[in-house]
Image (tube, rainbow, N blue to C red):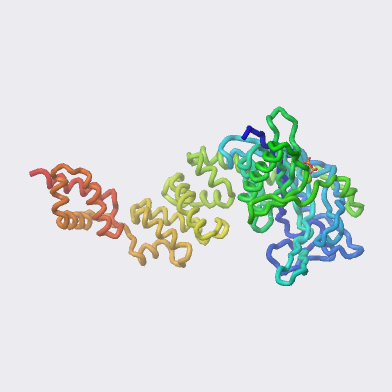
Length: 484
Ligand code: ADP
Ligand code: MG
């Protein structure tokens, strides 16, 4: 297949973590009973008036500041008209020509290895729609849940500057990280708090004008973003190479069959008949408001990562890994402050065994039952040779389900490490006595058997012997034996 240049632009919807909705006082909490959180405004009853939620505006401004964007100090809301059963007003309140945020850049080196910046063209506030569910048991019946209707969304639109599915995913991970640092969204894709539309086109070379794009709507996981883009790129290339043309359209990703399907041909902005919402005044944002918000900006992901590299002298991989999530990196710092283990050791345990265990249990760090204090105690026990690293792993796994503390577990599970010279020497002597032929072979020059003896001692001690000490003692004892 000839070479093609892939071009991707993303539209990311972040559900903002405000207490109440964008234009009503209904709660935004996830998981409530259907329609328990839909107010008159969300139901679009006659005569209702929207009231803008200042918290959402502040969050949008924080986001803008964090990507060095310009904040539009005179921003307006418009109506985007279309019919859908889960949009009772018959229009969505969104921002069209005057979005609150324009022109910023997001640095995505942390999630991608190679440094890369993505141009963000705009970010605007809009309300989410409700949800329809189609009951398969009773054919023909659909239910509407308006709990989601009116939840504030920040739609972030990138320039068409990404060139692979991997770059697109790295961008999405970085946006999620940033949103979590700013505390403006959970970015939780499983809960729909972050969703993505991917625009994809191909062209022969980077010098050619952009190809016709296809928009893949509402993709809800990183894996699906990657697969949908890859499928779509192949489809477009095959179409073009067989002499066809790519139609500008909106497609949906079908994750079961791993393909995209046409949903509708691309509508023009004209079809939506955007016009300024007469119920909402212009939003004027003053310099002092921006300054006040700027003063509340937290340490951002890249800055934190740089600090971890310098202050704790971590390896890049672990520094990146830890800083992907603000709570995870805070947890790391709390552990470091409380343990005698080195920062790199703490990082290795957190990024290795701990993340593996979370993954096995299908948990995230946000649901961890383990406190930094407990983690630090565990690492201290290993550091002080009270238990072996292997025993440490066993205890860590136990901590997920047990109500016992580290010290109690060491005792009740009999995992305390044996470092006592006399006890260890006796164990070694028994092993040597029980393996006379191996001992003879060793003394005749078969050095490799040293490891065999260590293994036998470890086995006899049920893994509790301190391996360094076993090595030292065994050396001593064997050299004594070989001198006549
Ligand atoms: P619209 O307003 O019709 O949605 P935009 O120009 O705002 O169109 O673009 C929407 C998204 O599509 C942006 O993320 C942009 O980067 C991306 N995009 C535009 N043209 C292309 C293209 N030829 N190939 C890939 N992505 C594109
Ligand atoms: Mg669009």
